[in-house]
Amino acid sequence: MTPAFEQTLAAIDALHAQDPRSTTLEDGTSMPQELAYAQRMSKWLEPVFNAPSELLQLAVRAQHLQRWQVPREEYEKGRVGYLTWRRDQGKRAGETTAQLMQEAGYSAEDAKRVAAMIGKKGLGRDPEVQALEDCACLVFLENYFADFSRKVEHDHMVRIVQMTWRKMSPRAHELALALPMSASSAALVKEALSEA
Image (cartoon, rainbow, N blue to C red; front, side, top):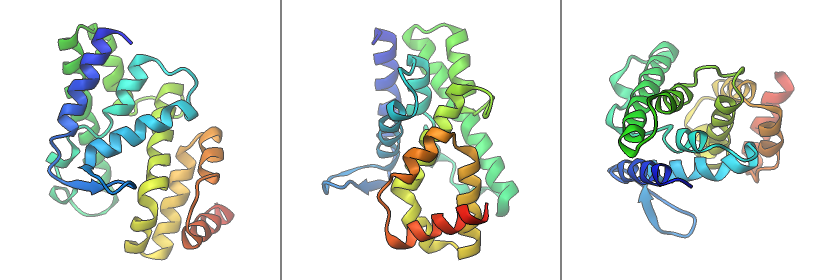
């Protein structure tokens, strides 16, 4: 890895570590939520995308950068509010990451490319953007799906699974179907896919 990559990655993780919210990992240790999310994203990248570039690795690591600073509740309820919040978060995370990259010595062009990936520009057409989306979907299914499904009405949860599935590549589908899930989560996925 280049010195610019190592410096940028360290700067990204330092910002992740500022998340005041914490989560408990499987081994019982505590970690800032956003740092745990970022590490989970990076863990999925190799299985999803063969030999990822430095730029893709940075985009995947920074996808939720400082997301806690603008809570979802500050936007209107419903799908439109959610999509606006998500778009704004992607733009902000991309701009911050691009700045960190240029401070570390990356070109403006490389920084712009990573910001575009974080903003998911070209999803469905750009293999690297698709890889980032696949990682996000797999992290959700592996780590947050079970808890989330207990808080959301059943039929709405079925639609969420269907929408998530449509955003994923065939490779990500294979990986998702191999995830260990509780009986209730597995049943929910099966129902969603049978109706898709």
